[in-house]
Length: 279
Length: 264
Ligand SMILES: Nc1ncnc2c1ncn2[C@@H]1O[C@H](COP(=O)(O)OP(=O)(O)OP(=O)(O)O)[C@@H](O)[C@H]1O
Ligand SMILES: [Mg+2]
Image (tube, rainbow over all chains, first blue to last red; front, side, top):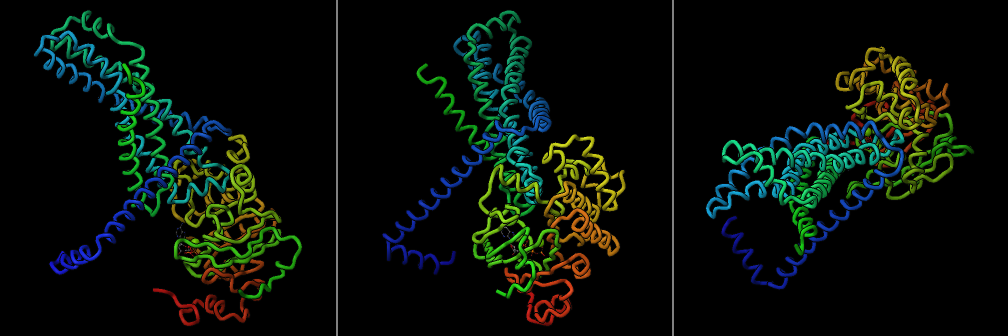
C-alpha cells in the first residue's frame, strides 16, 4: 500500500529470489493439495450417495416427491428456455445461411443443435439454478439446525434418506425433461420457420427428420442424465457439508450452483468428444 | 482428574461408560479426558457453564462427532469405531432431545414424533400416529397440533415436541440437552416429571444436561459437573449442597464470585 511497504517488499524480493520462488511453489502446492482433497471428498460423497441408492431401505415416497419436484416443476423453466432457443436458432441460422443460399438447412441445424447440445446444456444449467440451489439450501438448513444429526439418532441414514432420492430423481428426470425440451425447441424453430421465414410446414418437418439420427437424440439424453446427477450431487454435497449458520447456507447455495454449472460445461465438452470423436 | 467418588463406577452393570474422552476442534480443546459412568435405569445430570463441551460430549456418544481419543462403551460394548448398519442398530437404543429441538421442518408434528417408529422400527403409519398423539399429550400438547408444522409452534412447544420425539420409541438410553430451557417454570416441572417417568417407569437410563438447578435436583440420581472439558465432580444428587468442591458451590450459588471466571 504505502511506499515504504512497497520498498520493503522489493527489498525482500531482491534479497532472496530463491526464497520467493520456494514460497510460490509452496503456495501452488498448497492450492493443489486443497483442490485434490476437495475432489477426493466429493468423490467419496458421490460413492456413498450412489451406494445408498441401491441398498435398502428405500424411500419410495421421498423419491416420488423429488421426481415431481425436480421433473414436473422444472418443466415450465426448461420449456421456456428451449422454446425461445429453438426460435432464435431458426432466425439466426436463416440469416447466416441465406448468405450462401443454404436456407434449406435451417430445420436441420435447429434439430441437431437442440438435441445434441442446447437442450441438455441449457436444461442442465437452468436446473442447476433451480434445483441445485434449493437442494443446497434445504440440506444446509437441515445441517445447521441439527436436523441431519437428528436423522442419525433416529436410526435413519441421511445418505439414504436425503441424498439418494435426490440424485436418483435428478438422474432420471433430466433426460425426460430434455426429451420434452427437444420437442419444444424443434417446435419453436418450426414456428419461426413456417410463420416468419415462410417455409412450407411439410417441407420444414421433412427437413427436420431427414438427417436426424437416433444417436443425436440419445447422446443428448446421456448428457442430460450426467448433468442431472451433477446438479443434484453438488447440491447435496454443498448443503450436507455447510457450516456456520445462515451465512454458511448462503455460501453452500452459491457454491452448488456455480460448481455445478462449471462442471456441466466441462463435462459437456468431454462427453461430446467421447460420443462424436472420429466422426 | 477428580476422584470418581460415585458408586456408579464400582457397580457391575454400567449402561454407559465414557473413559478418557478427548475432542478438539483445531486449537479449541473441548473435551480433555471425560470420564462418566451411568448405571442402568439411573438418571445422571451433567451441569456446567456455557461452552464447556456438554453438547459435544453427548454428540461423541451418539457418533455425530468422533472423539480424538478415549473409549465409549454401551452395555460393555465399545462403540467409537462403529459405523454403517452397526451404528444404526446401536442408535435404536438411544433417544435424543437436541438443545435446539432439531425438528424436521418439512414434516408435520406427528410425523416428527412418529419418525423413529415409522423409519427406525418400520411401524404402520396409522398406529404410529396414535402413539405420537399419545406422546404429545403427555408433554402437554393438544391433539390439534399434530397436523401443524414445527414453524407454526412456539419455541417452548417445539421443545416439548422434541421431547416427545426423543421418548417415542421407548429407548433404553435417553439424552436430554437442556430440556427445560425456554419453558415457563410450571411447564418445566411437567417436563421434569416426564423425564422422571421415562427413567423410572420405562426403566430408561438418562443423561440430562441442564443449567436449571431446580430441575437438576428433581430429576437426578447423580450429578456431575463438567469444567474445562473434564468432569471435576460427580456424586449423589443429595450431596450436591455439601460437595466440598468450590467450583460446584459457585455454580449452584449462581454467583460471579469464585474460582470460575467467565471469559467475557
Ligand atoms: N461442530 C463444531 N465445530 C467446531 N467447534 C465446535 C463445534 N461444536 C462445538 N464446538 C465448540 O465446542 C465448545 C463447546 O460447545 P458445546 O456446544 O458442547 O457447549 P455446551 O457446553 O453445550 O454449552 P451450552 O450450555 O451453551 O449449550 C464451544 O467452544 C464450541 O465453539
Ligand atoms: Mg449445549
